Structures are given as structure tokens and as C-alpha cells.
Length: 314
Image 1: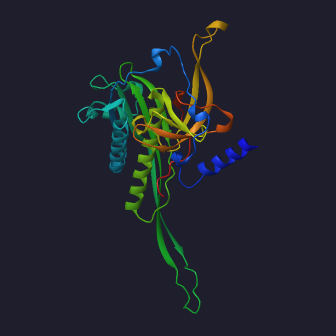
Image 2: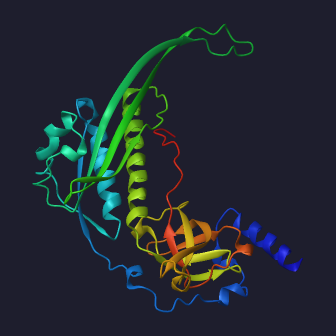
């Protein structure tokens, strides 16, 4: 009963307005350490900087220059923030594939021989429609006021599809591809609409970069726990694409050689969600902490967030 009450108390503390793991008490689990004797060297990845070129194109939509600028800026900033990528200058390289993009060629057919990079991001506007609509409405009648007169208002709406591809330049293989159809709220001016589309493009690029981070981030370790394992600090942060809400999986390495299985295998023991992200570390709220055994030294890998709408106006 005491353990149950203790767990409920931790849940209330973790569900508060601010996630504050340092305020959690230290329990018996927090002194435990996972020891993985003879860990394979493959788990300790050497940090290598891969060169990435970012190519953006509005296709036939000349009016969307600001959108491609927003995509270019967002991709460059987000990829450069990841420890394992170095964004290269691609000003002169853009001309090499601009015509191929406009002609609708598949990313695998784009000539990348002149692009000096290990990976290439191709971000293009696949389709775009915009509509201006005038409508008349009558304001609500105020008490003891003259009858309200009909008024005219203008509403601007847009729909856009963004096509992103992550290409291994050496093999020209498309490793990842995503199409985004962000929800863009109606605006009262063209300027506001352009701003909303730009924000939608930035959010879409941010989401795609997060998926790239999940794919290439190395395994992490739990550095410490608090609250009897309810909160765990891991060795990955913003430098590897972790963001608030990023899901993670905790796992141990199991030796199955004695039963004829793989010599070493991953044994998932728990999941969690990053709640406070710093530059090189993150605090994770552990799911069902009272039932699992997350402790210092346990391995962690990033999981991909569930797909959701990307809004262009807020």
C-alpha cells in the first residue's frame, strides 16, 4: 500500500505545471546501476560529421519564393544543430538540379554528381492553390443602437503540399520521403497568408528533421534517475534532435548465445517521453515507472513521434 501511495504521489508531481525532476526524492531504484559486461563496440558510435546539401524549389510556383526561403532557412538551421551533420554551401549546386525538379523528375533521377555532400535534402512545393473570397455579414445588433449595417470582409485561404526527400548521395538512393499537407488557417490579408504558409513550411521542415535525427542518433545511456526511476536523464539532447515530447525506448543488452539466438540482442524494458531538453542531455518521464526497472546505465534509443497535423497559423 505504501508503494502504491508513493507512486501516486510521484505521478501527481510529474503531472504538475512544470517538470522538475530535481525535486523528486531519491528511492531505492535510483541507486541501482545496469552493468553490461563486454558491450559490443558497435553500440559506441564514433561521432562523424556527414556533409548535407539542402536544395529547395518552388517548382512552377514563382510566387512562393518566401516559402522556399523559409524551407531553406529551417532545414539549414535544424540540420546544422545536429551533432552528426554539417550543412554545406549549395548556392552553386542548386542550378545543377533546378531544371530536373521543375520537370517533375523523381529524386532518384536528379543529377547529383556535382553536389559535394554525403546526403542531400530535396524540399519542393508539389502543389499549391490559393483562394480569395469576399463575403457579406451583418454585425450583432447592440442594445439601444441603430440597426447594424451589412459589412464586407475578405478571406484568404490556401492549400499546399510539400514533398521532402532525404537522399544518400553515394548511391543516389532515397532513404526517406515524406509529403506534408499542413493545415493553414484562413487570414484577412495576403501578407498574413504568406506568413502562415511560411510558418507551415518551417514546421514541416522541423518535423522532417526530427525524423532524420531519430534515424541517425546513436544509442544513449541513462545518466541518472530520480523519483524511484520515474524520471531519467539521458545522454542525448538538442544536439541529437531530441525535442520536448520526443518518445524514447529504454533497453538492455541480452546474451542469447546459450539458447542458439543472436549473440547479443536488445531487450526493451520501458518507454518514456522527453519532458525537459537541454543541449546535450534530456530528462525523460518514464511510463509505468513503478512497474519497470529503468536505472543508470540502461541504453536508450529515440522513437519517432506519431504523425499529427502541422498548422500554419496559430
